[in-house]
Length: 316
Image (cartoon, rainbow, N blue to C red; front, side, top):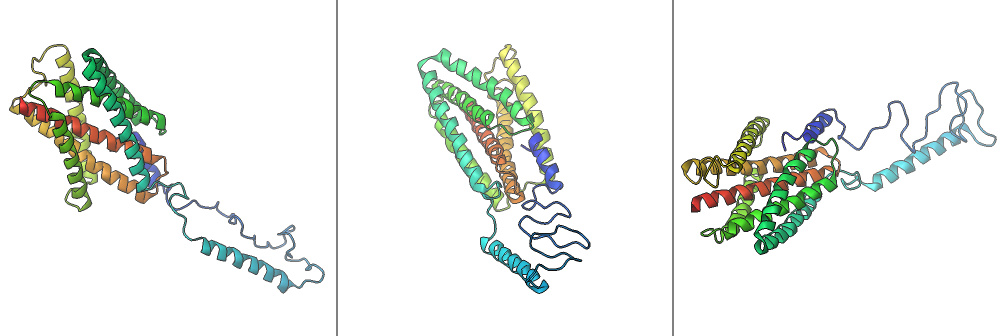
């Protein structure tokens, strides 16, 4: 998320003050609903009000005319005062509730499609492999589209969650059916929930820090790991490695790689928490809550898959 072009644009606009406050009136223009001040030597002022160099209307004194203006202004000010402070929902700003609700919605989509993929994979192994491939390729391609698209597309984010569910359900069922791996999916789910809760508590209480420097280091390490994972996958597909996990297999090197990956995915959660907090405090537009929820779901699923691989290597 730290390298997402959408967030880079958000940081630039935030530095320019585009999200600060509730909007400003044009320079030199009166605020809407407030009476204009009379101009020297200018005709055609506010209706029913005298101008400099003009005589007051018949039967009305100058003091009465200006008194009516003052009374109108006081009424408007009293109405503005009684209205209270506008809430983030009224101004179209993102709130923590927005992010939480959209995260739960996307997570429900992932679970529904994962359950369907699990069932189909258990009935037909070939269908499971097809869902595994469609989910993997679909999430890779769509993830790049969402990351580099200049606007936030809710349908693409929802479609990504569905494809992610297909991949997670199919690969989880595949692991669960391997002899000696019984119960590994439940252990991976439980471990993911525990790590999620631990990372949130650590970030919330300041034990785990997220700084600009740590974001840069994490970004570089993430790029390196993604390139390694892609190369490792290609070498496995062409038959260079006999081991099911590619480089390192289930030996000490492979276990070390998995521990490193779990650490990266775990810290990704802390970055997501910090980014959501900054977005809420900065008053981002409400539509950014979809992007925040998307990033959080991606990190959770990534963490689950890395823990699943680590447990599988340990069992081997």
